Image 1 (cartoon, helix red, strand yellow):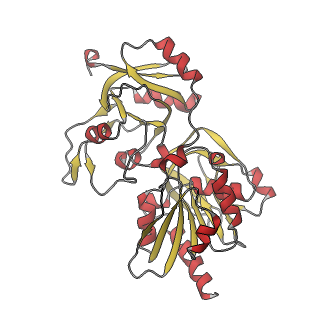
Image 2 (spheres, one colour):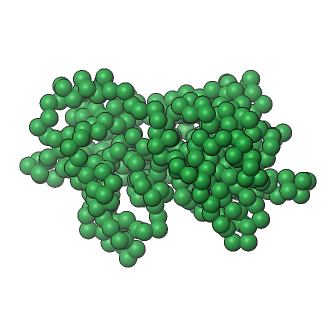
Image 3 (cartoon, rainbow, N blue to C red):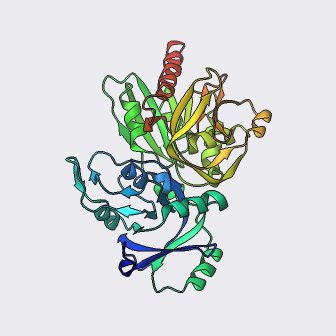
Length: 368
């Protein structure tokens, strides 16, 4: 790209500057975000619309983004809340019969900033080596020193779950439904709902702050804890709710839901240096020794040593860094995984987890 075309720059709190061409929203408000990277070669629409990316700017490691446009069916949420996308090459003329909009059009609609022409290889290595940090996309003429000072003083918000969770209870009806799942929405992806519906479940999605008595009044066969953004310790209300529901029915948690489940039993979590985000993370199932290729998107992990003081045991580990990727408590019929079985990168390596949840609910009904 000709440097003359550059009109934006990405500034990191360590003083690094990456110049590029803006696309998406040209927002006069300077929005600070946490910069992270994703290694997936496809799936930018799902990444853009995943609520777990709230308040984050995503560097796409794959060099070409936008080439297949945006479809009507593949969103993970109705209102994307990611802060920014940073790409090497942006294509604004998609070739895909399913495409109904360009990525640029959707980013403009939802106020998402973008910058292209960036050396994303260097940027990903910087994040990998030094960790995620605060960053901002601003005008090329902006004072870098002032921006760095502002970045270092900026406190990232801790209320992301309350902003992305639905505000009222919603019901989804599956065909020939045999089970009723109540899902606590902390930023739930649509494909999780679809995965439950196609397994003969009705799903009642409740806000993140739903009360215990309200959940019990719905008479669920099982409780699902969704993915979502941010630090799991920022939602003690959800942790307390889950704690009060231990053992009452099967509980299944994914990503943030897995962390919340672990915290509810007394385990601890910590922030990873740069998180796990991509579609090819190898996970080992400790019970079967089988390897699953998984989709990941998280900044926090469960502390393995902290599990020793809880009734939980680790069920899966990440083969890249040996972090905990799954836990269970068989007595309470509760389990969770850090990765996303609904994303199907394997493509079906992890689908059995939903089937396990169904089997637990079936057993509960059979013994009721």
